[in-house]
Image 1 (tube, rainbow, N blue to C red):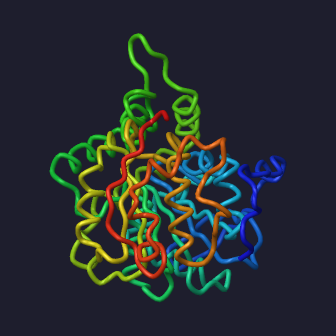
Image 2: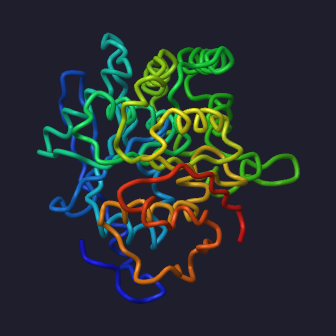
Image 3: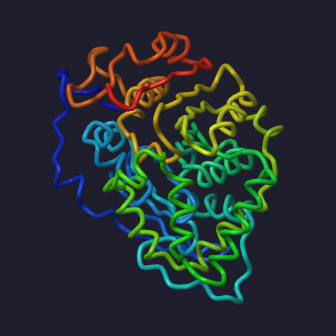
Length: 349
């Protein structure tokens, strides 16, 4: 890959950011799945998978609309946005007679998507439930995963409290659709309290946009994905055998913060790193996407994909090298290995 230009700022054609990806509907052994392809297909592949009730627009748009992140990712990858079945824009209701897929079925779907596009080993980025599916995929198809970028990931089977929470939401989805209560439960899953608003504080534009997006989902399709996730097995023991590099982000206000710490403790310490983002919920990609920039830059440097011209960052970025643990800059951690680190990034710099 070409090195970045030797400037402090990033020049990006904003028209190319807003251009639409090419949508594909791929038939697999477990039903059809939508894939939006964005970028030059001659470049290495980055696979994304969103959280429950979301698709690539509502889950990754905030990240890709950061010019620095756009340059970082599209400079190095062709992005293949995979939507959970029935979560794509304008999706029809999945036939009620069609069986509910398991998490293993969903992971196997990804392998068929790779086969369709003729892809071998890929980089993966997933958020919460999507992070679980991609982690499972990496465990089942180890030779096909170069690395994992996991945002507020799940890896254990649901606790009793999560199982009950999901069961309540599942019943509401099944009988009442994506009603106001379901939307509130999902927004609480995604975002910190600060941007969800309250009595004296209006909710942020990000939350308003996500609320509108949830209203466009087919409720039974969301129910199907929730049922699969609520029946997920524990992946903890298998994580020890994963040797692809892993970069984990989690907001310190995420309901799944402890899950992220757990998965980090189980991964090989030589190949994983943890970045905790302060004052942020689960969906770091939307709430604080700039917090992902520097860690991803140095993560990709380990693959020889991205090399900043200097340690300083774009003036547009709220981050600076001092925000990151010195270990993240070490040749050992960013060359052949990654060290486990706990990096805290404040919401405002």
